[in-house]
Length: 220
Image (cartoon, rainbow, N blue to C red; front, side, top):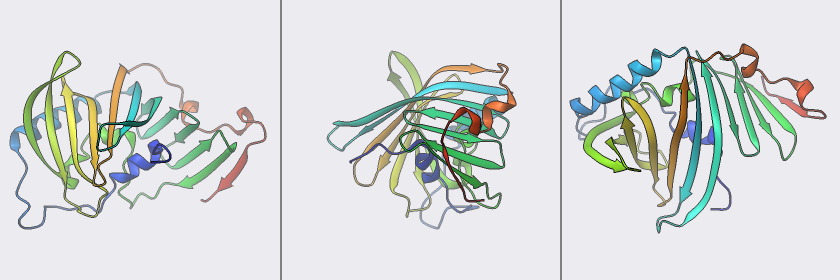
């Protein structure tokens, strides 16, 4: 793999048409897993704001690390900002600004309310409910902590991944592992979670004045 997958592309991976129920023959979800995932969703929705650091590690089928990205995310209501190596993504809930440092270029797009795109907020709430079948694998040791491992299988078989493992500690998603059909694995780990801290609304808007000479590509 020649380059690390962008964080925004990773979010779009999860987007799929809404399905009320899985196709015949796919089985059903584990009610015990649903209880845990629902508790995660309920807890997250109770936060006014969320700040966290994250690491995205990419490995091939043999376990060789192909690349790593570190970053941070800020969330408030439907708004978010993502800082990651060479890239910043802003959203005020209506628009998305994607800034690429290497080219000093920002692309602006309008959020389509009819699309089922996944935002950072949805990755912590009920993204699982209509897009996956899920089962509880039980307790596993993750970095010296006992966490619940839940396995998710996408209902939409055209997705580039065939399995997602979610590791939950005290009703908070700590780590997510995505298994691509090619054999590559993407591990998204969260640390330094901080909730209900004051975050200025301006955090979620791209301020052109702070990026001298930036080229603006407005696709709205």
